[in-house]
Length: 273
Length: 330
Ligand SMILES: Nc1ncnc2c1ncn2[C@@H]1O[C@H](COP(=O)(O)OP(=O)(O)O)[C@@H](O)[C@H]1O
Ligand SMILES: [Mg+2]
Image (cartoon, chains in turn green, purple):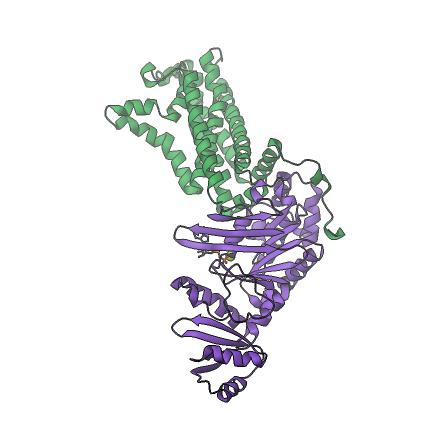
């Protein structure tokens, strides 16, 4: 080849790209457009802001009864926002055709999509952590007379566990994005499923309760909430609401995420880009 | 070198590419010519492993695209200039592509310089004109300094200046020893850009030859003769050093085609001298584009009737390279 397009020197160093390359790629992709930043800020602010609202206007009687659980009311909405971001990380690639450029650059499609999942998932986890502890911290400021010390296993699970649940929710969102390939459809599923569908199961006679207990997002919530004190908001469900203990519930939720991701990766590797 | 063997792609009932075999050699620009819907883009997507062939295979120097490691260092492609995120800058777009194949950061600057986008590299790609998007796409194709380059209709919608730029650029890439495959639905454009031509219609190979041969063949004159004494006339014309071809034409039975620069007078007189009855004697001459339309149009008919015998005079059975001259009696 002539001098005009001289060969790239680093090109010869390694013959295959490892996991780090695809993670690097997805990091660049995500942070070179603005919407992921917005989603992350909105998600963190939602939980923290709703904690301020929940703890900032209590009368002294209520304030004494406030618990860590009370500060976490907005987290579900933050989770929605992060799931939307995760799904969009895939569906915008289909919308603008860059998925073809991506698969052209990395024909080992599963590798590329897993890189995306890891990056998006870890960001969601980070946001979950900031949101949960930020909301708790705001609570300690606004409801100073309440006992908000983190001193039970359930309370640690509720706060730190949020990162795991956000991570797994993002994995599910990426999987749905890969399967649906279309923003509006993917987002509709991701919002309707945890908020509406899983709750509507309760309306079905006989099997409905079981279906609700065994639905994935309920178990994600069950992992976080079991054993926590709802304070003036009343008890956080009783044993009959939960199909299994908290860590089994987490494993169950993780199995859903892994299963959906496996189907998505298989499908993306087989079908035409 | 790109090699396709019996490449076939079906989308439901649509046969987009039908048993296509061809070769693209290094060191020259090969044109991939066919009307809209002929299957050019589909073929290119299969070369890049984006679509999976229903049957057959296509390889780059013997390897399927999906088995390539760091493929951007081997094959560069511009299939659609719009395949960029509109809110991402050109530099960021090239940066992620470079990272994916572990190319150095300097390669981004290098290709931006080559296509002349250095000044505007920080702008969002969505603000680019079509010409600029096209240049960005070419920059992406060149990123890994690949030996093989694919461009799908790169001059579509460009102004004359942009068209000349791309054409010159293709020639330069080929002169550097690369394998360059450029698709187009315009024969006039390909006549200026490509040295070799792979021509397809309705997913089927119509011809693979040098552009010169194709153009000569497509624009040459042919005389069509219908006569009950076909073999007799053919041998008379052979004695006069004329090249003839007999084909089955739909609804007309066997038809004799006489090729080369000649007049109908010459054939009419030769027939009269030997007492041969003529039912039809027509001169067929068309413009380049007309001939091309006719050829590819024929292949449409060919499919519609699914009759191999219906191949008309300029159509060539698939998988056969067009010989330098017209074929004799077949
Ligand atoms: N993804 C697809 N699904 C269904 N049909 C397709 C698809 N892609 C192409 N086709 C059909 O295949 C044929 C060839 O299309 P294409 O390869 O785009 O042709 P060209 O690029 O030569 O214009 C057309 O009839 C087109 O409608
Ligand atoms: Mg096309």
